Image (cartoon, rainbow, N blue to C red; front, side):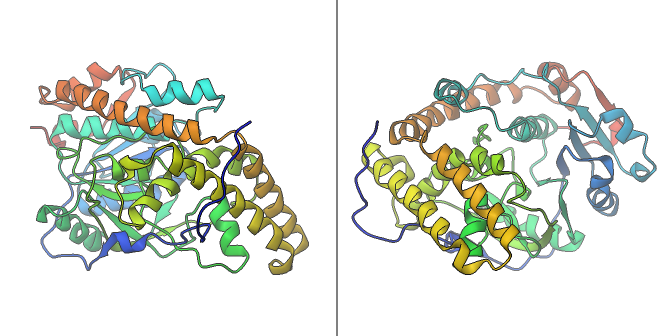
Amino acid sequence: MTILSAPTALPLHHGSHSHLLDDLPPRPGGRLDAIVVPAFRAPGALRDALALARELKRPMVALCSGEVQARRLADRRDTKGVTLLAIDVHDGVRKVPSFRTDRVLRKAGFAPVGDLALKRNLGLLIAVAAGWDRVLFLDDDIGGVDPTQVEGAAALLGTGQYRAVGLHNTGFPDNSVVCHAYRAVGADQDTFIGGGAMIINPLETGSFFPNVYNEDWFFLLGDGVPFRAARSGTMVQRDFDPFAAPRRAANEELGDTLAEGLYWMLDVGQDPAAAGPGFWGEFVFRRRALIDHVLAKVDMHVADTARAFSIKGSLRAAKGASAFVTPHLCHEFVQAWTDDLRTWNEFLDRFANFTTVEEAFAELGLDHVWSRAVKDVPSR
């Protein structure tokens, strides 16, 4: 059993990391090359993304699993007028690098969190092969994206100052379960930018999305410090109930601990690469103390009995998972992630030789591709 030392000072949690971002208005004269959507919900959830692609006259790549299949999506009426690449992402699509972080998680007994990271990595690779340098990654639970604003946000990438530009969420707060609970007991909890609505230049980044919760925060850190990201334009995250299933909190706990720890280092002006076992010992103590602190305050701040019951159930699930999030595991994961960045960059070098998306599909083993007007898709 690991005995953790108490941190030398409070606070237990940083409720905001927004000071790391430059909040800027959209600039005129911007453009997008494509929209990449990791699709999982029913096809109707893609209506907003399809409408945006249609209005911008840009191709949309839909990486499909769950309730949406490529062929059925392609046959829908609302795809009319959209240059669409719909791809079924299934268990056989594994022609991406074998990551050490995956092995670390399996060894520690943590199950994979889904296929979101895989889809985003495939989106990066397809974009590299196509020569796209302004790509909007957009989740299927995001709406309210203004075409003019998003093009203006994309213009900020052209300055060379930013690795990514995220849209500002004016809808339901997109936080982890523990952070939602923190807000529910009256604490100040902000939101950050995320991969659900983020513009990236895939040709200039060597980063990738690891298969852990908060994979987008890791992506933003993958090119090292100084941290350079902006927030511009707006979007709307659709409502969801973060406390509907306690397993959600359990599944998030490792990734949330890791990401909050690394961004804590950024907050205090230190390089996250310097986070050694001693830092993680203190931070894991803080995290567990935070969960206990919030758990103790739920009944005082949440009047609805059923709601309070759900929040406490989720916090207890997070606390249970946290018992397996050791300082050693955190340190080992970050070391493995550093190795994986090198592996990913070696893999990217192979894609530099491709000149069409069709070559990328063949290399990745993406057999189930449906394309409308594929001749309109930019290639280098």
